[in-house]
Amino acid sequence: MPDEEFKATLQMLVPMVVETICKQYGMDEFSALHSLYVSRLYSDLERERTKLWHLSPLALAELWHQEVTTGKIVYPEEA
Image (cartoon, rainbow, N blue to C red; front, side, top):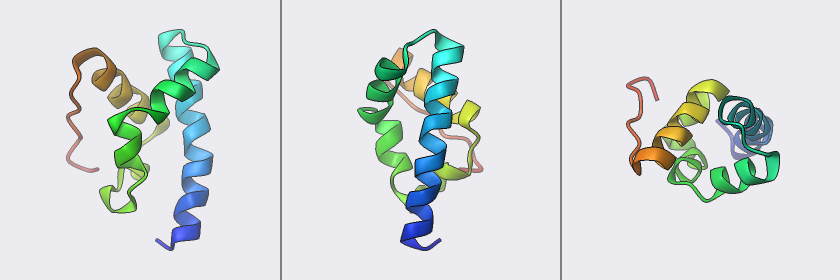
């Protein structure tokens, strides 16, 4: 995927993940966004080669929650 296309994908995906985190875990938007941005998940998501951008916003929110609650992330095989 070309770099510009990947950046555009992230710009669309991140707000959807934040919205899902807010709904699923009762966080306000600012806290959810900050928590996502400082997570290992986001660091991995920023790297196109990880293919995490293929996952749904719900799946990414669940991975974020897994990281926040356990300190670990177990990525699905298809990522």
